[in-house]
Image (cartoon, rainbow, N blue to C red):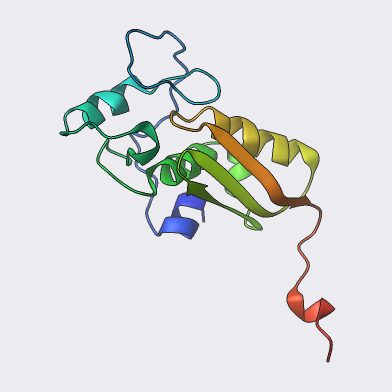
Length: 144
């Protein structure tokens, strides 16, 4: 089960893809951390009045308060080694992506941050709640 299904209960649409275009032309709102725009999605969002802010663009350009988180989850699902990470989760606070839980190693953490930073609308990534190592169950540490 991928991130999008696990976190939001929706399947990954085939037409969703992370754009790698760094060519910028007269945009009123800046891209995310890596300077990349998703021009197709922005065009769809621009059809709405008022236009939808990048962090609130849903999977099809519609307004969605969790739009950025859903698009980051979809981008993560497209990376073969990250799709199966089930001990971590994400959420959004405005244009910030918050990663939480556990990942097996530093490489996985770095990949999650890299993918999230490439999604149009991501302005910052909080990884303070994401630990490296095996997940610990509360029953193991709870007093009897």
